[in-house]
Image 1 (cartoon, rainbow, N blue to C red):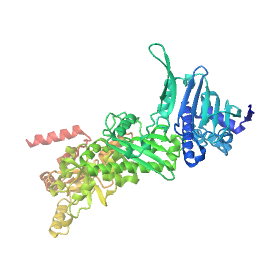
Image 2: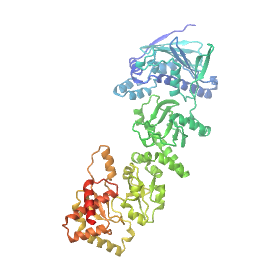
Image 3: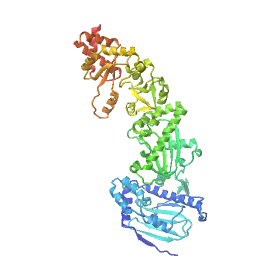
Image 4: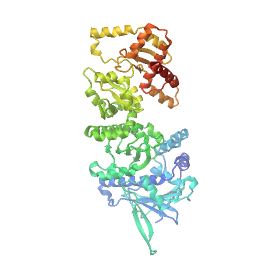
Length: 638
């Protein structure tokens, strides 16, 4: 029985939107197949759900699947499913009109959006991924029949100004979308979408984890020249993150991790989580055993893979993972995002920020569990990723406390094993309220620094910080567990607080201040080009002098780092501290009292300052002059 073919026109605004979709929005034309497979998968999901709700539907759900059919002679590619299907009214509502409302507003937004990626996201919000088929096809034909109805419908359009719609008989339940393909054109990004290898590649990249089988029948010719047909399932359907943890073996986790990370080792930790509520998602994250070779490369890719309902969206979604966790690999599958969401929109999406916060807490929590249960294994992980984790202390104020709990650093407590800050606090002396540390290039230089002398003599533990990032984070983090962090090379250090009330100790200190009352201001003037003050030290026991900064001063190493980055900063004058009990300093005081105008005293002052600078690993302002003065003094002593 014949049926009436209706030819309907798109609205003028809809035609404009179609042209944008076809010619401007999608930079990668391969995604048309991703969109059509995603639609087919949704149709299968809906049929399965409705068949459970409505027993009268009498739908066959025993073999729900998607079929891809390539016909080189006709130059057509068909995407077929046996899902819920559509009625005529469904087609008019969902396909015949791109946007049920607000099309004019959408067009206005797109015109205001110069960024194509952001415009793509706007279009994605209106659900027009179906029309991406017109990027690769001159004409699209759709046949569909809704489950529970007898009549089928054919819809066809060239994507220009009109579409045809008619009722047809004898259609199976489901939908088939046939694309009459344009010729392949490499310059225009049009691949040969009839090539088997290309179809397999697109399915593998974008739709490998769709829960329903995606099948394709191809012809194979054997050695005798006989031709046979072979039907293959193109997708693995193994979305591990969609299964409960109890259903997944460690071998499956390892295989999946190696697939997405290109690592040959098993992951150190696996984090499998599911969130339900207003924004549903699943996540499967891995902490590697070893750091990737490009961990500190500026051009290295970072972030986890983003899927939307098992459809691949992007490889390195930076919006889901902070830079300091760039070593984490894995997948996040969000249920409520548009397939066409862009990186720019993701950065500002409130729900994505919420997902990111929860993922970060999960990763940091997993690391803390390893530290608690297996200190040796955690130590190996810290060796690999400790430097980047400490970057988080500069970037992530919300998780400062959690990160500080993870920090492991060298300490004077044990020459072999690092310590946590928690361990340091537990070993603090009675009455000690400060966590002491010293930064430097390596452990040997720090341990032999003059600043260490009084702390070693009195048995105070000092943290040894030798990573370049240590110079920065200790300045920004105020403290840990209520204890202030203090550099022993800055400010005033008084390890005899309890003795201050002792009259004898107080009298001794006052006497020394009186004895050096003339020398200290003279030295401050003589070395005014290098230091801002000369004072007596309470942190030295065997060295003659050391150089310290004020509590808020920038360290010399940090100065060098900023200058290496091209930032010009004014030089910071520091403080020269003298050991009043050292023979050299005592002799200098005596000589100054005897003849304050002796020019040799100024040279000795330079040598004292230069020696203190060298002792902390600093650079002499004039090495040649220092060497000449030292040589002359040594010669006179022989």
